[in-house]
Length: 370
Image 1 (cartoon, rainbow, N blue to C red):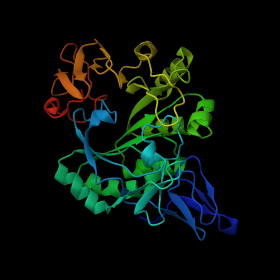
Image 2 (image 1 turned 60 degrees about the horizontal axis):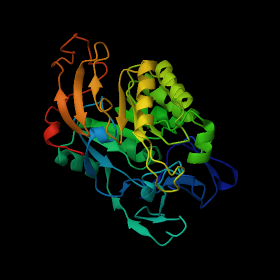
Image 3 (image 1 turned 135 degrees about the vertical axis):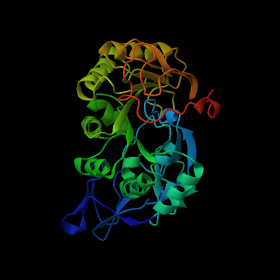
Image 4 (image 1 turned 30 degrees about the vertical axis):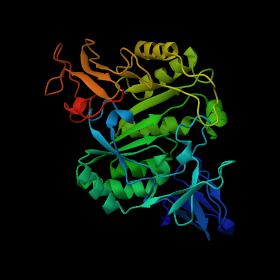
């Protein structure tokens, strides 16, 4: 729905400048920003997607986000809207990320060539209604996910306040392309966790594949979140011939160690061709296995592999003695061996600072991906 936006400046000639994402669009009257969800009406900026969702929500295993060290085995109530601050050629959710809202936010439509007449209905909800839905579902966490949540800024702030009152943890699954101002508000409102997609360490990759200027705002967001107590996990989708070199992966893993710390869970995910298909190749297992080994050599304690089977890449090991703490097959637990105080049963290493929240030991009975 149409709602007065936060974080913008008035400029001359009724133009406005938005500060919600790092594109910081200057928007002319009656025009929208790059995300296509924030519009200038007579010199005032509005979001068009406040409370506008593609569905009333779905229940996912939290590992699907992916978050492996935050409330393992929890159910995540997942919600999404439309639009994105990026235009990634490899987008897996392009049908919502590249959709545009109508002026009242009640419907979405496509501007992509060949899909101009394809429309979708959006569900409108108030923050209070969302909280009631989450409570009824029994979920202990809520994830803003699937499209880019950072452009949903006002909705996230208003709903997080209410969700925290019910002790429901909030999660951002995000490209991290934020500003200092927007990040500050997300930290202050109490976002609990974020999976940040660092797509590459190369500005050229971000320019040619994602349609934005630089990776730097993403790195800055990750550092600000981590240093302010938000649980951060990193995902890197490895695309053949674009970001799969040893030098690229080493640069990423070394940056994580130096700036976020060795306790930062890092996920390498397999790519498959979709949307504009920047590569026609699927990610080979050998490439993912190589990335796993590079990250382990760099000193990262929790390295994971997604979108494919990997003998070790779904498991959580004790960083001190390599004892298997949580075994997984897809999103299903195959083993949980950790004390009630979150110590390794073999060497007594304290895992409580790295694995946040309660471990749902019954999750293996509820979810199975394969």
